[in-house]
Length: 172
Ligand SMILES: [Zn+2]
Ligand SMILES: [Zn+2]
Image (cartoon, rainbow, N blue to C red):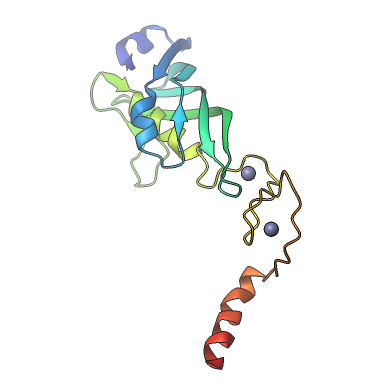
């Protein structure tokens, strides 16, 4: 998916709509939580103003995850908005090291790698089948979303777990 600078320029500030699809195979390999993925439908528009190209739009796909708490597989429809700015050689901007735009070297903008990054950054590192998933019982392995078991699982505050560990070591 390439945007031609000359075409954007000729539109004199009128947005250029675009539509593309990101291939799922490569994206899936680059994020360990993505177990399955449909092609990523991308709709957006690009507009060139004062040498800067503003690209906005939305990525959407169905992603297969495995819940980090209950290990249950689930599918989620994700919609990821994106907004990127590109500076052409006509732009009157200063490169100060942490600027918020991508520099365009040639006469085209290759959107794909940037959209791939936007997509991957929005994928959770700790996917949950539902926000309050109760997870598996650490003792009997029952899925606590589906059943209540009778195990007495002592709950240790994670902040104190290190301390408990310390005491059990000194007792030895
Ligand atoms: Zn879950
Ligand atoms: Zn249990």
